[in-house]
Image 1 (cartoon, rainbow, N blue to C red):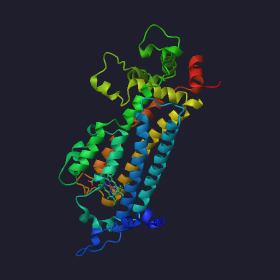
Image 2: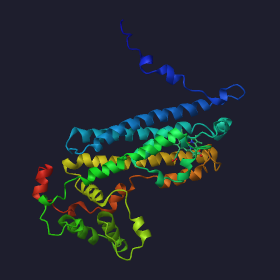
Image 3: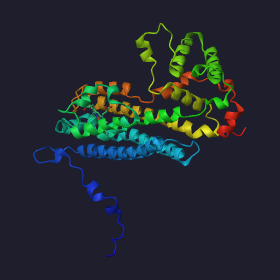
Image 4: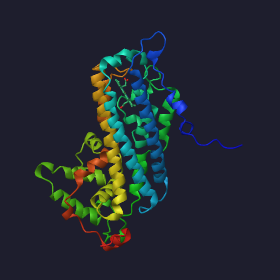
Length: 358
Ligand code: HEM
């Protein structure tokens, strides 16, 4: 039998997509609310883009799962490229809020009560993006909201799927492993002292001196943070609470590699790795920009009323905005940079190994 020629509508399954908008207010017995169509379509558009983001993330995570990744390989370049794509999608998702803003609070009120207890809180794909990026349930704002099986919570199946993500390594943990494997401080490239503690490595001894000497009087205590974050060394009188405040989601070894990449990012061989780290920071910022835009829109739309999903509404969203950064440690690395002209010179052996052409 001859194959049907390709047809736009059937290839894109438009019958299904275009026929998937059912405003509840249009049902018999209700007063049709014009803006409910926009409300449905905008959510569906978000969910389609969430799907694409998850698809790109899966690819990137598979690369990081490999035992060995060559820094000059196509793999890493594709990760960089696909992270950039995620960034562009998130930029679009941020802009999309302004379309919904054309709906007035009174327009929304015309159908809002019909939606209870469903809510964007239950967006499984949004939760999967957060979880795969590295946001774990224990660190979520109002984590008990997630465990509710009654009004506003997830179905058992969705809750299980979101939780299951945590059984595998998330992107943050995979990037941590990748950074830990970096060979920059390998003894073969440096004139090693007999001491093997990372803080005694010739590079870090020199770097720490330059950093600490460059601190102003008011910033002097940053040397304590430096030792804690990069070497897990703490003054004996530091309380557990202070130690906790200095803890990072990345290991000290991974933090050292990440800082090293940021410092020497102008060398071509570090470009891809640098852009990958920078993209993670950007993705984190764009997620939080979205949370902020959504919060402002919600305040305007429902004021201080509780959400249809039964949370405290704007109050809950504000807490999530403040708490749900995943890559704060990476953006915080700027605290520990020094002026470019003061950068320690790298040993010839390392430069040759990394393929720098001086
Ligand atoms: C009239 C427009 C909207 C209003 C008034 C609104 C309101 C809310 C409220 C009050 C919450 C907190 C949970 C609750 O108690 O319901 C929430 C959460 C959420 N909404 Fe919306 N929303 C709107 C549009 C959207 C759109 C277009 C999306 C796109 C997918 C969305 C996605 C989400 C997500 C992902 C959460 C969870 C956020 C988090 O936990 O950080 N919302 N929304």
